[in-house]
Length: 533
Image 1 (cartoon, helix red, strand yellow):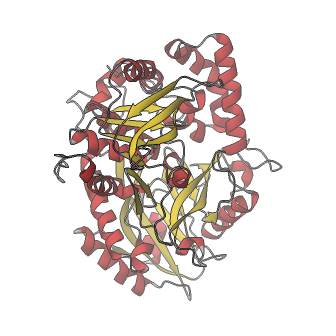
Image 2 (image 1 turned 180 degrees about the vertical axis):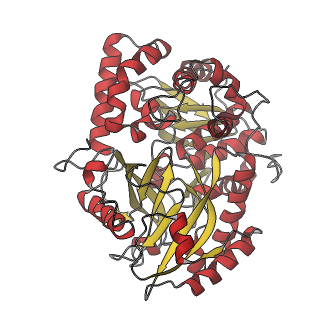
Image 3 (image 1 turned 45 degrees about the horizontal axis):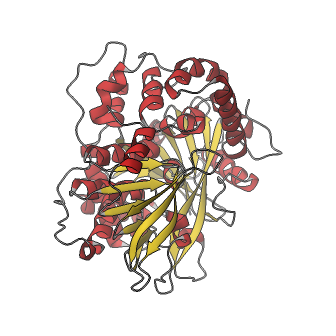
């Protein structure tokens, strides 16, 4: 039975406060570091000032891929590492990281042509050690993508990458770290890095509980190594410089549409006529997602990012170009999301999409900071960071590179009420916790989604939910895939979850108001546009 957040806080307050390593940041990078550290026998603490995956790691494009455009720009090592990690993740966690077919249509006199793209795919396949590339005729293309624009269509290229639920991926990695002894706490802010007054070396960390509006209790922990994995927020704690490198926050926004309005069985990509960036339409959790943009984000990072009017128009423009018969409009949009990528730049004048996605590590007397990198390569980044910190932990040996990230699910018989496809998803989403999930509640699905009421119940009781938006936007994705953020279902959700969360009526009412305000401000259409019906 997982410890509750209150039990973890009590354990931290009453037990030993000495750790081999403390990780700041509960996104995929921090979760991966905690997984490798705890799996290597280190006493490990992970803290996150908001909710797990609150930032970039719940608002990515959901793709687990090598990045063909990185290969095209000659970032061979990044592509190699990402493709190999993609294959590993699909093998270790089917149902959580799944193959997804991609189709790139080729139009007359548009770059890249099919011959050049097939050469690129040949290299991509060789790196992966598998063959997935395919050249499609126009007839075959339309069989894969009915409704695709046919004017000047000459051929298409097919290949395979992967897709995931990024927030659930983070949560599973955290659960694996906790199974190996790590303590992982959300809504616990790293307030001050403590240092020796003479050597300036890190000695500990002062933490503040941010789970309530009032200032919570303060906890001080001791450690020789603090790893700053806060992504776009990394410079707020890091003092040392890393050459000319700096973090350039870039915003990527997405539209969520009903599948019936834009039915795609694969990811369809086209270079946007406005800036020549690849934009995708792909199936995800019973909906179709259009994304992504790539723009400088100058807003305050403490505020949730939101899509802009220009980004909505940009994405609808590519929808109209790819699927002229669909007539998708903003009235069809179920939800939106925007994430901020912590891209590391050397300050050159580049378009956002031309920036390198490689990660950079800073070291400063026991404070190691990491920024940049890709969702797909989180395990490799984690291991590299811990290798940099080995000198601060005498006798420490990093676990074998072949050690798995994920433990397998238990061998259980599929309940008759759960489809084969949903059973695979549940096994991947929950792994060793699957039996507890099934016992937590009803196996009926919620509305027209694949999410079980049992998943909602289990998440409410076992995953450190502090606010209703944690439950609706990250533990489940109901707030993204149901109209109006699932507002019509909140009364039923209240009946199931209020007792599990131990909230009184006033607390539930306050949390519901808070959640709907967040959804309208950051997950709906921008103010002043037509709201989704």
